[in-house]
Amino acid sequence: MASYTVGQLRNVAMVGHGGSGTTSLAEAMLYDSGGTTRLGRVEDGTTVSDYDPEEIRRKISVNISMLPCEWHGHKITVLDTPGYADFVGEVKCALAAVDVAVVVLDAVAGVEVGTELAWGYADEHHLPRLAFINMMDRENASFERSIERLRATFSGNFFPLQWPIGSQQDFRGIIDLATMRAYLSSKGEEAGIPADLQAVATERRQQLVEAAAEADDELIMKYLEGEELSSEEIQRGLRIGIAQGKIIPVLCGAATANIGVQALLQTITAYFPSPADRPAIIATLKQGGTEELTADPAGALAVLAFKTIADPFVGKLTYLRAFSGTLRADSRVVNGRTGEEERIGTLYQLRGKEQIPIKELMAGDIGAVAKLSTTSTGDTLCDKGHPLELPRIAFPEPVYSAAVKPKTKTDVDKLGPALQRLVEEDPTLSVRTEPSTHEIILSGMGDNHI
Image: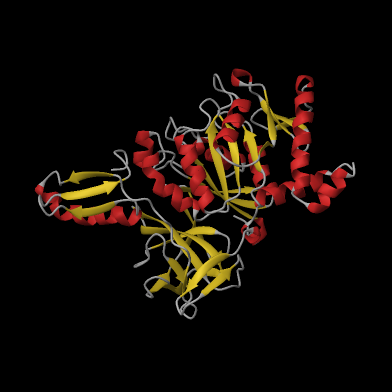
């Protein structure tokens, strides 16, 4: 993978209700960007994202999966998250590490419980976001009805950035309202706008231009004076409005048919902020006080460990987001919480289960490292001479408990370490011994979670 500056990075979390198609959409993004040569299917267990045997068996996502994409001079790191409420801890981990949230909706069901949960968690981090109306090729799919439900459920200004060409079995492409060009089929072939959609596209574009103008004082004066805004000015206004949360763009497509996916990649790179454009994060200094950190590769080292997994080949694998400074392979750092030194071995860029060695992880980028000894989810890695802590991830309390016991006597000694490893991987799990019955109680977010 090529080298990129901070301004060329985009970090995106795919969130939504279970079954809305976040994994299929992430898979299509990876395929269209050349990251894989085959478009996998969740039903066949062939996606890059859902590689865990449990995910393949259940046909749902259970863990965060990292999918880096290269698109027109940018690197988009996609974090695919589970949609089922039992695995809400994964969503919270991912949203703490990204700069953009892509909220995926089923074009038939519209806003669902999982949509509302993900939206609220994105609000906690003040993330710019877009709504992607997926499955436009399904029976009873409706783009307009989905937008109405978004507006009825959430506060915010929703503006279609695209308009569908056809619907349900006739869905075949999208109209980009900013450029007034149509893109058809899975190849995104450019075409003129169909005559029967010219009027609605013109009307919707006017609303989009007004929203872009209102985001910038210079543009609104020009607009009110009757001057026409150029494409560059419209894009500038949209970028400002989206970054400030004043504009929430709505896109559409069909992930499994690979329609509208290339337009989504283009939208993320053209309109959404890089780590350098995001507000400074406030770190707590060990000696007292706070410090504002920006995505500066030469700044103080501040790296968040946002996810821990037990990899069968390399052991404990920790997912990292560098908010400031540059983390280098074969170096030594300090855990900001414990004060203990950690040795950084090989750093990795992950693509599903594939581990690609890299030399360094600079501010704004996401990667992973293996075999950290004391670092757990939510900890901060920093320089020994400048100890600090980033805000910790707030996890919900467990709501469901079950007694667990080994199947055979030979498994007794294995149970304790196995449960401890699970708790390290997932902070929404907890283990305790019930004093009255001496049973081992495992608590989590639901039956599927346990």
